[in-house]
Amino acid sequence: MNLYEIYFTGSLLLIAAGLYIIASKRHLVKIVIGLEVITLGVNLAIASMGIRIMDGVIVMDALAQSMIAISIAVAAAIAALALSIALNIYRHYGTFDIRKLRRLRW
Amino acid sequence: MDPLTVILILVGAAVAIVILDPVFRKIGIIELGGVIACIAFLSTLILLILDAVMEAPPRMIVFGPDSPLTASLKLDMLSIYLSIIFSGLGLMAAIYSIRYMLFEVGHPSLDDPFGIRVGGLGLDRYYALLLTLIAGMIGVTMANDFFTLYVFWELMAISSYSLVAFRRWSWEAVEAGFKYLVMSTLGSLAALLGIALLYGLAGSLRFDVVRAAVFGGGDMAVALSLVMIIIGFGVTAAIVPFHSWLPDAHPAAPTPISAILSGIVIKTGIYAMLWSMFKIFGPVAYGFGPALIGLGVLTMSFANIAAVMQTDIKRFLAYSSIANIGYIVTGMGLAAHILRTYPSENGLAILALAGALLHILNHALGKGLSFLSTGCYIVSIDSREIDKLEGIGPRMPVTTASLGIGLLNLAGVPPLSGFWSKLLIVSAGLGVPSDSLMLAATIIFIVNCILAAGYYLWLFQRLAFKKPMLNGGHEEVREAPALMLAPLIILAAACMLVTIMLNPVLQFIQSALEVILR
Image (cartoon, chains in turn yellow, green):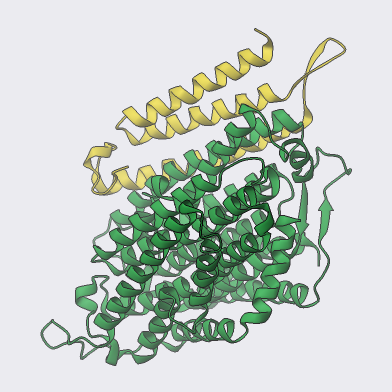
């Protein structure tokens, strides 16, 4: 296995783990964590695509680096927003349990 | 005009509103934020229309050195066409919001635990988010590489999540906001994974470089990235297996935002799908036509049946948005199928795509008009139940007349332009009578159009002519304020205008299509 394959396999594992979290957990904050895990997986996939070998040295493509940096910033914004909405849900219902909500059927 | 100018005007106005809000509150005119938003939308609209009238040649702006690795923006007829629709409906929503949002933020129940008092309204954030939402959508249509597209996409998405959850004193809005956020973020991440795969294949994300790498056909990885991109953008476009956030999110938002979300945000998903499928991948090498036709037919049939069962007028309109997305996707699917299977019948594919693009305009006008009229009813009697709204027509004649024009346009009653867009798609679908797939899809399309026309007219009849069931009827109900009626009248006039000027509009659409199919 070369480095690219290791990274890409890792990213697929992270994405699968995140999807499992979102599908199985009933806690709002855990769902947000699941989203973040998937984002990490996708970022790792971008990194695996950006691996270049120049003169025997492994380097990362500049475009991949900037993509990952911006993607992390976007993910932070989404996580902040999701947590603030979760907090508002907590103020309404006094619980983070998704089963207590009225209309959140997927 | 520079493609960046429009986006800078909108984002700059958003920043200005947030900074200047304390000043507005000090002098006691909190509506000034809305006025700034209106001016920003109006100036972008004028700039774009000037560009369209002068038939400016397509152009590109590159940030930094001109290499395949740098970000860039483009401006061609397709992006001008969509940007005009986006900023036009944005302008209408901003004018409408000035009066409507005072009702909305003055409204929360007094015993709410959130400490929202008139004064700490958050209206500055509302207008800033509205501006960044439209800026994100215009940016998506102007992006010239996949990563710029993704960044503007997230600008649009994050603004719309916050706007859906804007009425945080209502349980409905926060729940719908969370559901929308989770599902739509999953979609964006699927699209980003597809984009990452494309980057691995092409080494760059500029549309021309990616197109050169994948247009002629490709292996499994290319097909996988195509599927991921369709799924990712399809979530925002609310294509049926991925639609379930829409009927919750669109009614829960403040009404002008419902008009924006239903009218144009889902169209951004359609644009991203259209661009990546027809321009980047190419329908000839990848046979996604039948799959698109299937998705479109499923979408419209499901949504039309679900719409009939709704008792809440905003949910009803939200389901009908899904159905209209089904029409557009079917048009795209027919075009892709024709381009791949019958290369000699190129004209039919152009017909189907022109129908889809014209329907984007028609649905934006009609659905914007219907949602904004619904907002007038909500202000007057504070209910969204169709039962309670029955027979309100004579009391609110201007609102009901504009709602009628919007619904007739959506129903596709000739001679309104909603009829012609459906006719274009149908005539393309019947162009090759020997093809049973196209024939079946077109027949289902026609049945759906008739069903939809039936329930739109039924809704209009209930609102306008039926006797009120409640005791005393709607005697205290007054017509909505003039500032809310103005956008309704402008949009109704725009419906008429598009019908009268159908020829120039179709020529414009044809020049937009040349960008895609060239």
